[in-house]
Amino acid sequence: MKWIQYKVNTTTDAVDMIGEILYELGIQGFEVSDHVPLTAEEEKQMFTDIPAEMEPDDGKATVTFYTEGQNAPDEREFYSTGSSLRDADFSQTAAFADPNGLIRTLQTRIREIQQFFPFPDPEISFSVQDDSQWKDKWKDNFHPFRVTDDLIITPIWEPHPDIASPDDTLLLIEPGSAFGTGTHETTRLCMTSLQKYITSQSRILDAGCGSGILAIAALLCGADSAFCLDIDPLAVSGTMENAERNHISSDRIRAFHGNILEDSTSIKELCPDPFDIVVANILADVIIPLTDIIRPFLKPDGIFISSGILTSRADDVRNALLRNNFTILEENTLGEWISFTARP
Image (cartoon, rainbow, N blue to C red; front, side, top):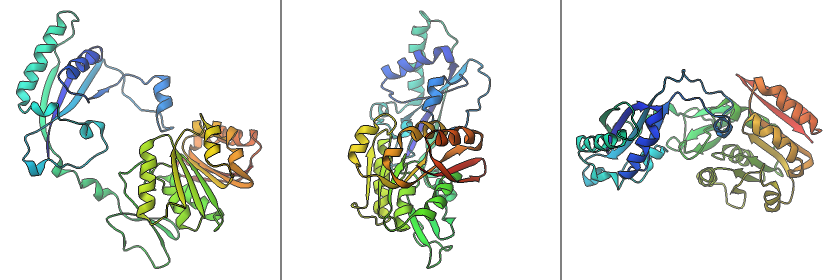
């Protein structure tokens, strides 16, 4: 399917006004690229501990948006990239079949606004994007790989990887379904620790489940059941979809949309019995307050596995665990990441 990509090169001061014009024209989704430093609140909302590396703010910005190109009826199906720009409903913008006409309309509206709010004339360009050329290219970068000695993660299009032996456990995943494919060092750290402590009676709480990969791996390795939480509703549905792909019955895994830090009381009501293992592969800034409230979710002899922690934040997490009277059993590192295994 063909899309028309538009780029409006302007100033950061003019972005909001151009955005309002686009909304007026029926364009509901667009992306802004600039070098404006993130606010403290924006950094807090990011799902990473790695500081954003940005070039100095030069006052310039680029607004990018898409409209549907001219497609035959059989070309209208397209692959979802997970991008709000490309996955949005473009029915309103489909009328802009002539990109030059849309640019002229946009320029006219900009000139009208400039009479009241002067700003430099933006440079507007367009190009045709054909998703048939790239929609499956991402698959070239995801292949079966061994996470532990006997656990292999494999994409759904390779259910019988050549690297697998009869003794291996295979975990099938749809990489685009939600966060987490198992390739990241933090996920490997968690899986390695999980395998050491799982028994056939183990009940698992996965706080921040993402794609559900840790909970599903635990179940495939013999755990009894798993309770999964995530603040992203798409992660919840992705977890259950991946569980079904791996033939995990619905009575062994549950997934809920919720924030354990903000509503631990309600979440505890959903799972009143404490767990044998709690695993949290999130961020240091989430794990630190989590250590304050996680104890009621753990059995007295339970195991708390935490990862997603940069080694530079190890002292902060270690101190939080000790402050809450956890006994640290293991500290494992892989690359620039560290995981902790602790007991209450």
